[in-house]
Image (tube, rainbow over all chains, first blue to last red; front, side):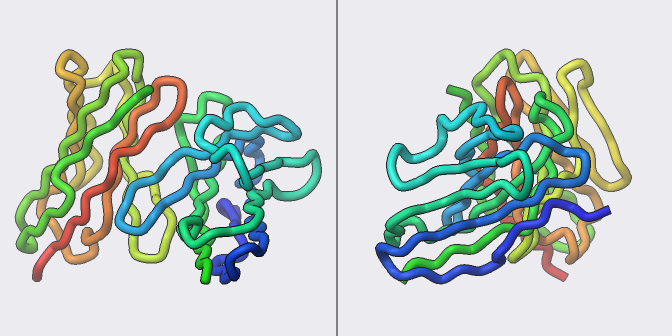
Length: 114
Length: 109
């Protein structure tokens, strides 16, 4: 029973490049959440998606960040033209219901921007 | 929006002692309060949760208490062991899960 799978686990990008982070939810889960964790800080909500729909993107920066969860395949968090301040751990979580209470987290993708 | 305050930010205890982490929340509509443990380099793992219709819940060495009137909830770990060393996050759910800033727990052997 595989858990939430995230890849890559570590990603290094130079300023101005694009970063793509992937998340496959747990089997049977159709609700995906992305959180960002800056060093020494807590988890900040970014976006909540269901298949083919963005439900809540209130935590997403207005520019350069986008997320999708297509009908087939993993959810993707895309960061365009990365800057040093984007360096963080990005965690994906999935939930079996739209209540978003019981979240199961992946191991995270750690982005380093040089 | 909902805000969750968590204290202390760091906590050092001697092996075998108890550890208590406290959180307060602002949204009176919050009705679900999970606690997550995050080990170095890993994702947060749910360790215990409590719903608003319950005042206390225990699972072996860990317990959570909830005071809805005061909007406080706490995590209690008894007989701490070195493997309890990690970062612990509280969270509250109103219409989305909002996390506290975390507590670094160090258990000294």
